[in-house]
Length: 231
Length: 254
Ligand SMILES: Nc1ncnc2c1ncn2[C@@H]1O[C@H](COP(=O)(O)OP(=O)(O)O)[C@@H](O)[C@H]1O
Ligand SMILES: [Mg+2]
Image 1 (cartoon, protein in one colour):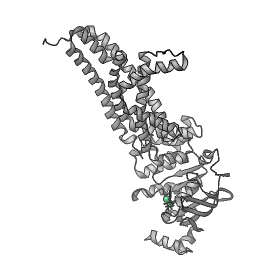
Image 2 (cartoon, rainbow over the protein chains, first blue to last red; image 1 turned 30 degrees about the vertical axis):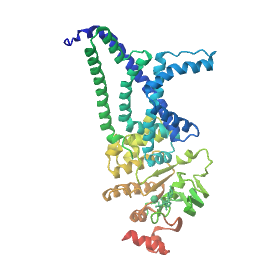
Image 3 (cartoon, chains in turn yellow, blue; image 1 turned 60 degrees about the vertical axis):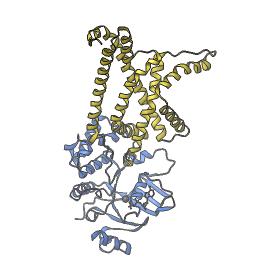
Image 4 (tube, helix red, strand yellow; image 1 turned 90 degrees about the horizontal axis):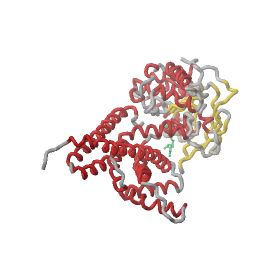
């Protein structure tokens, strides 16, 4: 086996960079969609909204029991067919790999974020709700300014951990022929035969990003040890 | 030291409860309660644990919904159907045994939230009002700290300031010193004595009989969901009419 040669990185870098940007963009989009939708899902369950709460519970149970890669497949192949039947003459309406990835990741992560927020809502002290009532805060302000902002602060380390997992999961988009960081590295490795170097480099990038995020988790934990404690 | 009490305006009542009933399942927590609180009046509510004191004052701001009778607060009858319960609640301040400050907000932000959201004050206006009331409870130096960084006594004084920021017509206190270490009880009671001197209408559940003697215009004694005695503090402490009140007083003195 020949010795390591990192000089190929010079040519490889632009392609790896675009892969990394895609991974980050997908993570960010899935985070935003997932948190917004997940918060709605958690609130619907918290308020026991008739029918909707049951539907949401079913959805979450389903999503959490199947692998993301399968959801990606289904979405990519089935949704165009369904859309075709709804709006077309039965011919599939393609939604494209990139849209599939963004929507599917968002819908998938919503189930996980929703569970985090739902558990957080249950942990809020009853006295917090009573204090809001006594101060005449509306239900909307109670949840927005007091309850949810506490839950999100207290849960922020877990939310960030989940987001790190999400970032690593973006590599699954290879099934849609999209190219993320890992995908870029493996395609280059096929071309130039420098498998070890390419996989070492992406490992270092994943490690750097994930450990930076873990540092954030740790500092959030310290910070909210006193500002966000329940009760 | 009697006489801190400011004039009571008997012609205007802030709270009227008539034949009030509250049940929890089959258990009757409040049984035919009649109580009137006049403007400027200071009432101390006492009685054994489980006698319904908390339930009664929680009915006054509709945190508990009553099952029978009527309750009228600031001229508005409280019902389950009423659209604007928050209109009434904004005139009723409440201080809890366990403070219930918002842990994620600083002391001054705790005091600013409701005036901004409910009264529509701007941020600078709310801040100015909050700082004024934090000064009143002598805790302005801690305005930018978080509740968990304060002692229990300090937290309870912040909770009092937070309620006062809404400029309520009546203040309800539910055992405000019961969760405090003994050395912190005095600072909170002193604050409450000062409020009383300002003429604020107060209903206070407490077993601090020194406080009751000093500020109460009336002492209301409850037992098993009913009001058993209702009179001036001197008479209540010196010559309670009922055996139940005697027994209760003996217990808390010894
Ligand atoms: N949410 C509730 N559910 C059931 N029972 C309750 C509830 N709140 C209070 N009670 C009961 O009502 C009675 C009066 O309670 P409370 O008003 O808290 O008494 P106090 O404040 O005088 O100690 C007690 O027996 C208590 O167990
Ligand atoms: Mg009580």
